[in-house]
Image: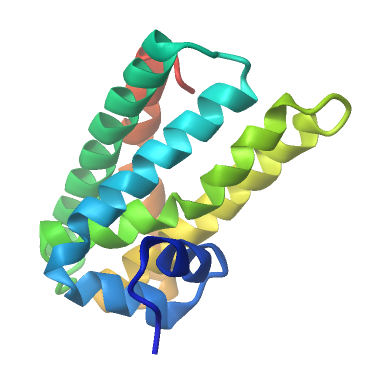
Length: 166
């Protein structure tokens, strides 16, 4: 069974463990943990981009939480209402929130010579984690999950770009 601590769940989500995604989907108390994952991701991204300081940290965290809500909401509308998935918005918030777990590695973006490779690798990893999170929450196949993830990601990317975080 998947662990229930934040660190255990982040590790499981980053390792693309289906049981972890199922666990957080059904644990209604895990929404705050999912929000914490999104904030950790934003802080790691800020450090990896050399955006140090309280203002960068706060704006990054608020922006990431906003973008997370947008991605989850649009994904809910597409997945549940268009494709007939079974998730609630809360279930998608939790699973998608934990899909941000690999983002902790964005802190390594600050490393000379290695940083430029980290960002695209983590971006691909985040997309794969998002697809798995969506598939598990909505209880449908990978093809529908990919379409839902990509269509839901477009407004997410727009919000992130508008906030200067893309």
